[in-house]
Length: 149
Image (cartoon, rainbow, N blue to C red; front, top):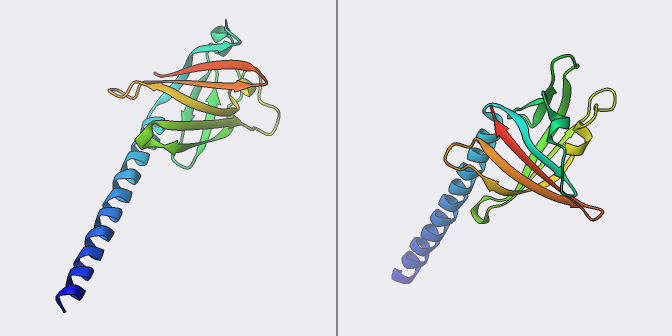
């Protein structure tokens, strides 16, 4: 009887720790989503093969929503809808951010340059106000800094 009771207690303890770990991971993931969806972002730095083309993004602002949709806005241009997602392991800081702007017509330049999966390389954790990303496609390295207004 004691062995059975010990097995039940051990099982509940392990189950409890597993459930607690999942709750902690879910809270961390929600914190990432909250950081992304709280505010308006702009491109503060963009390089393509080492060439700074940040000025191509001048005036563009991006808003990301909890439902994984987003919108790109620039005065004088129609709003461009899109989608976003993130994946990875928050605990190991291996986070990927994917975005695409897919209006009824082709997204205007330079927005297609943002449509890809980016690897998070740095984040201003204290304020969630800036994130740096990188990606390589066909041997070309791209770097992106998004800053919150």
